[in-house]
View (cartoon, one colour):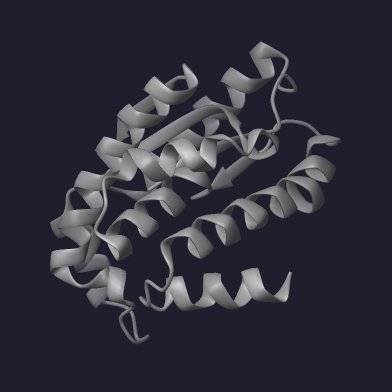
Length: 175
């Protein structure tokens, strides 16, 4: 829906807006993403999706200055987009900031040093809240180099293939 899209664009630009409207827009976005992107891709095998539920919960918590567990609980209710396995790639905020400062593009509000540190903490809290809310695993893995990410992606795909890969709509990797 256009209203949800406008809300999400405002959120990603750093404008908090109405908390309930934001949660509802993100829930609708997750449902549509699961239906039109993830579900068709699953017909070809396991799916790795970057920054889906946990990152959205962290963004909402950062903008609304609320505990992230509240948003994790609301977004976990969207079972169509619930991953079978979540992998949290933990990277030192200094490394993240160094990567961002090397890009030629303008900085997003989440890429300023203070926001990067807050997001790193929120991701850890979101992973704990996800495990508590859903009972599903969250693997935490340090990731400092592109090679680290390649090793992790291959390990995730092997895990999914060994598990049959289709017991849940998606697998997500959040950074």
